[in-house]
Image (cartoon, rainbow, N blue to C red; front, side, top):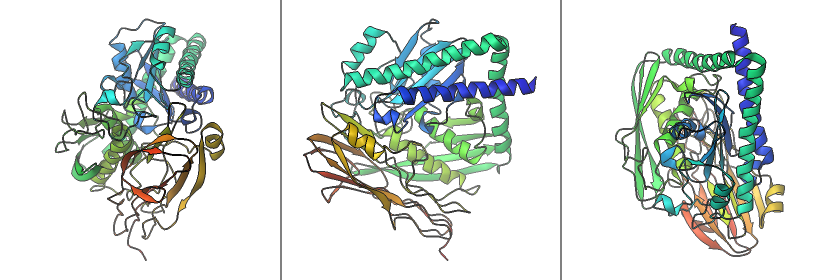
Length: 491
């Protein structure tokens, strides 16, 4: 019986992975098709996440909140819901989620859309202060043709937006067909039993790994580079037997900018760290996070309340949350040196096109190995847009994409090097950059040296970490991403 349940569990995981493949291959925008900035998952009738494709960590803890928001609407069997409201199960507005019923629960897809109708192309403005400045806010809403047309009409490139939503819808429908077939072949009762076992199995594995950690309370702090100020994050990790709590009491209040996080994003970052440090090979199921409690003061930077802007919270604050939680765990166990700690968000666009990318960088060295260079890891985990696809689809030329040699932190084990990325605008457009680790470098560990902070430049002149500018044809934007910190004193 246990073998049969394991086989069914593998079938469920494969359905989630196939959903992701359908979404990527059917999408229109480079951000989903090339960079794979999307996630897919299956949930049971109780709204527990059973299986998630191995895509974007920042979606890991947020999708269950989206399913809970839809379950509260009492969806009918044929209903499909769409949402992006960060205060009703979303993360930030460009991440649009579709949730539909299946024979044994729910299917969910989430994808970062290249525009959702903000005042700035790309809908990641550097200077937003309220959520409604960041685009069209979609509470959990039943999706039909009229609703889709009405929503996409308020966004740039509505045909591309509509195509990407339909790609998500295709992935949801595939999940429904695959689960119907699985229930027909194996019986619904056995499939439900397999879902329960997959959830419980992940929980057992992570509880066992937590129990091997030293009990105690471990604290750390770090800061975010807000415009004109620094915002403090505090985290306290308490390990007690086979459970742990992560408490953000003392973290700065939500601010008058867009570095705020909804609680779902904060949970995602915490779950990512716990998974890395306990049992990375445990199934990507909600059971893996049942032993973890996250506490964050309401109205704080990591549990913001509406109408706070959140565009950078999902991408930049989530990265810093991961950093500070790693630091706290580092008081008890070995952890890597700090990596770049930013997604280096770059958006270019006008009324004709919108292009968005994140840029990889150097990661921190480990106790037994150098850090990798020029990679998207941590809360991003996306790919780089191929130069050929970028230049074919957009009025942008890639002038340079290379390692930022010398940016790694020295040490017994060296950090990874960052990236130099230069893009030339070929027609008038707007530029928005959301980045971190420009004033404060990624730190080394156990005597290792810090990596080199990042830089943003326009035609050779320094730009701020968070900035929006007009570009003319021929202007060149250069992003130098941070290097990772080293581990151990240099020999």
